[in-house]
Image (cartoon, rainbow, N blue to C red; front, side, top):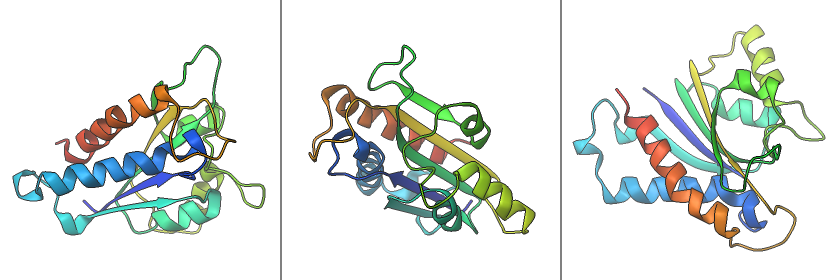
Length: 167
């Protein structure tokens, strides 16, 4: 199964870089634990990258993959605490506050971009999974996340790895 993992965000804006940091952690874990032990996934079928795009540009990155896993920051509040982790679908994006990078002022939302691409017959992934981490600070320049978000990074990385190799 051809899988794309995209860590979204800006790694020098405190918690906004959580998606990028998780993608790095997943990459490092895979480097330490060779694919030969894993079932149903080959190294050639897995792409891990980072991006700070949304909407149409993000949708374009997803074309041609069977499965896409996005990791991003989210600010929902409503009783949620920094470091809370959410597993979402594209359907959920229509129901909740947007993650930080699925939309842009010069673009459309990811959900809308995917709908348009589907109508145009583009080869979209059958499965899109979004791991979103509730963040605290996204406007201060720092390459270090806040403590609660930093503590969530290995947890989300583990969740992504489990998703990659689930049977």
